[in-house]
Length: 313
Image (cartoon, rainbow, N blue to C red; front, side, top):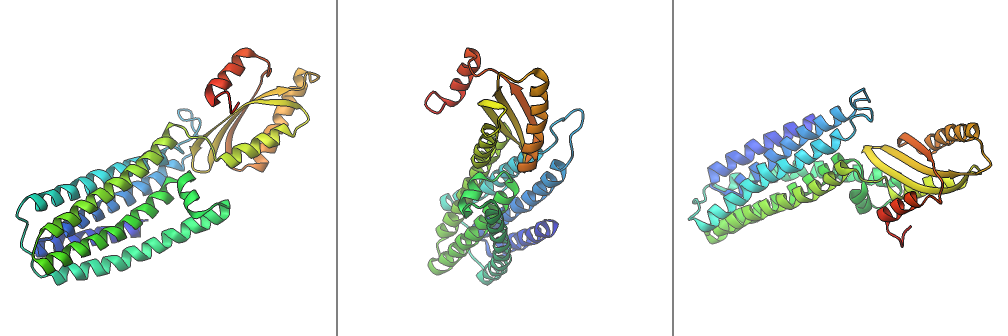
């Protein structure tokens, strides 16, 4: 990731120089795009390092959600340092006179080199997503929608937007050269800004959900429920709560109605065995809380109905 950040920083400098030499607002927008990408790489690196710390007294559930926080900050960075600047440059060129285009071949050369580097990075991101999708036994796009690792999604969307942005800049510079109208350059810059704003919105929404406390993958939740229902000591699963504590880290709270023939010592022993069995089957379970409750309790039943709706319950 340090190498990717260095490459993005170098590309940002080249694009900025090309933008100043050619007078292209689209190239300046792409420079801002690469600055946003460089910042994102740094923030994701911080996310990976800080989220790997173990639990302590102040944070008994660990620091896993730091990955979600820094990924959210990365989304904000993409919007502020990339999207806002690009939109401003685009509108300034469209509404103003626009700079006269000079030595456009410099822009083409920088865009060509950038396309090769960004394309290589995107291929690596695609391979990573495909490998993880294969491990999870889900489709490519489903993994992007449901993954609990925001860094994977951020890198994929960032690299995809980088290639689209380069194509928009190429079109803007080319049409400006062909027509002599800076309007096309401004439109390309504006579209790059809107592209970055859209990517930031998607990534921000994903990380917001994870920070608030999204439940674990539904397939995992269903498998846990089946595992609990199959145990002889349990008469009914009254409630099942899960929350992502971090990437590959899940908190589970299960409210269980045990068989009435079990004594207190039997229930305690059963809870220990259930905990061990669940941890053996589901490696993502970091914390497990089991609470014996009667399924006929009206307060508990109403609470479950309020959360999930009467039809689902």
